[in-house]
Image 1 (cartoon, rainbow, N blue to C red):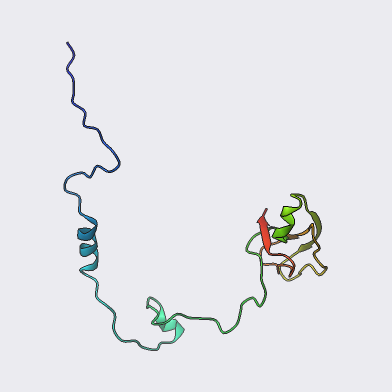
Image 2 (tube, rainbow, N blue to C red):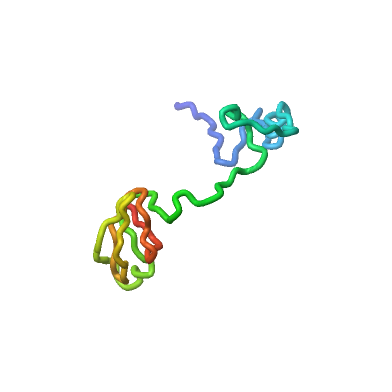
Length: 126
């Protein structure tokens, strides 16, 4: 004769005993925190480890053009409706943009940091 062990079914929504509720956990996390009050102006070097009172926003775009965040191919997304094959007509490097026009059905090999041609709205990662 073999002994049988009772098995209690476990599901993903079974909560073990002794587990905190979400509200109990939230209360424990927030209890030691104190709201910040007041602000002070500091030089950049003295501000390390501090929290900004207001968001910082650049006064102008850096770089002053759309640039690629990856190596790949730049093209107009609408061209994919006509064909999945595009003709490469040039290469854009960081600091050395592709200077010719980008016509329908064409793409430019583009490197990280390079200016995206005005006619392109998509960069497909290499």
